[in-house]
Length: 242
Picture 1 (tube, rainbow, N blue to C red):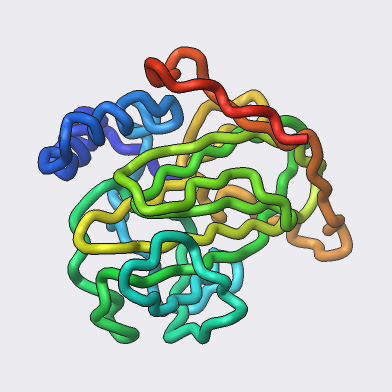
Picture 2 (picture 1 turned 60 degrees about the vertical axis):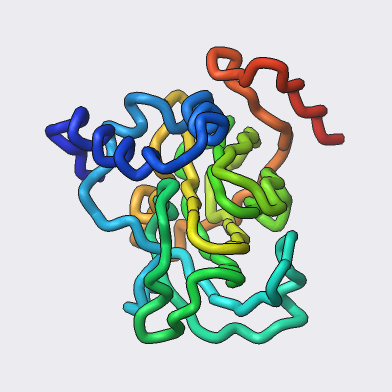
């Protein structure tokens, strides 16, 4: 990962994107620990896009779908047909206006969904923390288990969870939908064992070069995660999943 030498400028650029949001929405974003101070400063200067049409087998593959107007939840993707495919190494779309559509695929910028999927390698086993910021709804799955449910039509908000991952290959899926125009957001952050928060990037979790060393990973102890330092006033902690 390339680190910016001008963290203040990085934060300023993101702050400019947030200037049009309501105080309530800004308060929600500001209290999410995964996206505070250092996480903002640590990102590079790549554009904030949902993906590219350039094929990459090691990145997220995102299938784009049209949604009916007034859709309020993620759809059953098996019941609809995709209109195109994009690829992304990371999901790093901070709250901003979106009206450009998907060049080469569709001009639609509202009432769409993207179902991202891929595989990553966890070298060090242990507790991984994940946080998913979205506007509108999104869900995160690891090894076919749901970790985060941030579904529904809402302003930018984040939900976090943690899970124990063994060394090996893990599947990952992020389902996202955008309702009415114009604001979008989709940011997936991770804190690997013994490390701080950063944007989840597929390029940071490559498998061993020798396929003979690849092993299937496993997941366990999935539960919600709330950083006490960034708990939102008046918001109750989520119940632990059984």
